[in-house]
Amino acid sequence: MHELRDQILNGDCVEILRKVKEPFADLVFADPPFNIGYKYDKYHDSKASEKYLAWTRDWIGECVRVLKPHGSIYIAIGDEYAAHIKLILEDELRLTMRNWIIWHYTFGQQTKAKFARAHTHILYFVKDAKHFTFNDEIVRVISDRQKKYRDKRANPAGKLPDDVWNEHPRVCGTFSERTGHPCQMPESLLARIIRASSNEGDWVLDPFCGSATTAVVAHKLNRQYTTIDVSEAYVEAARGRIEEAEGLPVEGDGKPKWPQHADDELRWLYSECRIPLRHLCSNRTFLTLFTTKLNRRLQKTEPYTTAQVHDRLYVLSSTLSPIDKLSAAPMEASLFEE
Image 1 (spheres, rainbow, N blue to C red):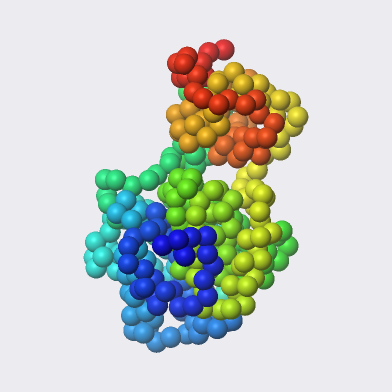
Image 2 (cartoon, rainbow, N blue to C red):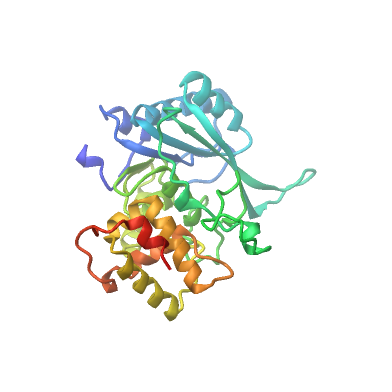
């Protein structure tokens, strides 16, 4: 299986995955061609409906087969085939649906005699309805009760995002992350999915590499990845993008401005809590408590989220006080104390 780890492969995803004997993926994200006539480098995006659906069954079946028993799969798709794919996953492959997400974006498709399309469907399914990864604390966002009304009763960790996502703009020509691929997903959207449904060190599969956003974000978030594309040109560009992304944060990830006093306070709080960085960032309870206490000390009107604090800790890791082992003191208590 090692030959697939952290690889961008050139070839047909169905043929490549059929050679894999054991499940390896903790998370699958797929953004296949929508069969609406897009001009890709090699793939012909205008098949007869029955042929497109037969091919769709093939690639989804292989992705589900190599997905681990407690794994999750997200599929981005247009209006034309969203319902078909839901039935394939639910009725034919017996997976459990968690969300039908609507990604709403600006720069939608201009139309005549109908309303402009400005959304993509993202279907989120799991293999095991009771056992799957969902890191709710790390993907929480600031609620209106916190931001608008300053309500002290609001959960200081924020709220879970709704199933309509408005905060991830479609990548256009002026964006710094723009690669030139005709169908590029924003890094911030993939970051939400990867953070929610995988852990550091987990393996992410994307059978349609395209601009390599999935692989890039997985790499930035310390996950393993495998992605596949039929286009040699797209694969070559993707490998270059991975190299350029080394050491960089996720683009458009709601990154806050971190003034010097906030960095200083974060370092001081880290030295007080006495929890090694890896333990702090991998334990949702500790990270939530740490974030809450940091926001309280900084008295921020727009609090940092756990995801933002998580990423900032790693950015500053080389300047943090070394902590080699867990403190003997009760850690929850030390984080709560003022």
